[in-house]
Length: 260
Image 1 (cartoon, rainbow, N blue to C red):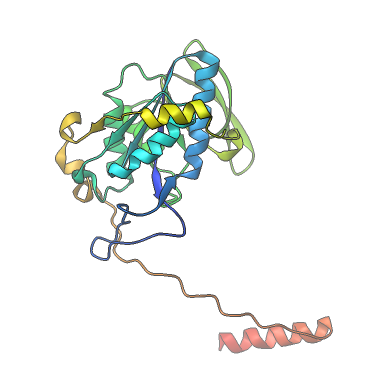
Image 2 (image 1 turned 60 degrees about the vertical axis):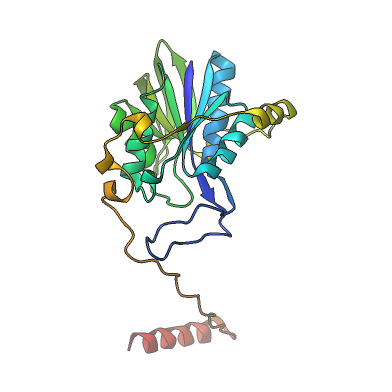
């Protein structure tokens, strides 16, 4: 079974920096980590490899430093990694990103299943995984919490919904996005760390994938950030003391004053 796991290196939540000219995240030189939901995608890919045999290829799109994320994925059991990196990709929104990654997938042979985390912590759109499937014209199952069965090029999965869950069957190749309930990510083994340390990763640029230039980066992104600001700090709330009746009366008067 050929498994591809898409991951993203995201800024550490305590160290987010914004380019004031482009209103995009500054990634170069910023402390980063693998997107938390992608850790579950990695684990699920490795588990499928162990159960059905085959290979797990991990792929990420980002600056050169994103090889750190690939190296960590190798230490967790993935077999090989690919970095999709080019200045032409800078500023890509979810549409441009999913197009670029989908074209990268087309360079791989006989992919059976693509696994993504449900969303990235620096965007929370949950659009890239479904976008990849759309560009590749393959079926997708989102918010997967359990793979029930894979047999005869058919996958059956349980997906979370706001009301409960659904059991969905689809043909393969397909793409799934996973939630944290699907598994418990392992820690790197010593053997995995040794393999990761020696790993080398090809870098695929726009010319390598014969991409349409007008669909890349900022120029290929129909959604762009026009303004960035920090939300106002919450003001300290007012504490009411006394019996419940008096507290309710004070609260009502306070609300009335604010509505004037």
